[in-house]
Length: 182
Image (cartoon, rainbow, N blue to C red; front, side, top):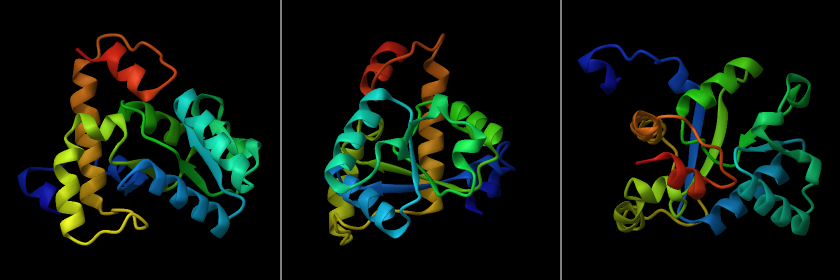
């Protein structure tokens, strides 16, 4: 609502497609994703970058998450998601890519898990927020979730999009940031 005080946002409905679950660090994120799997064993985990997918598959192998329940975003098809809980392992730096995939697959509100020590969050100052998060009493075992968090992520993605001339593919988020941002 506060965002509407100064005019209607263009992609207001698209802001509601994703629910961010931001963890204090990557270890807490992995444990959170494992809890998602335990709660809903039919969850399909989706990643944008090969490195994140590989890391999660290795983690999943240790914890009983079948490899076929972890997919690359660019290979995802409607029949893959039918009746399943979809969870993204990370954000793509370009919000437009996320929106395009969500629209093509007709996804409802979808969780995106991130960690404050991941490159996209570090780039926008998560290390400055970490002491405040801890001061507020957040535990590593609980994600930070709020529509303002999602709005902040989208704003960061839009800032990055302004710097990208022609997108260069990469195997990891950090490599993507190096290749594509000035």
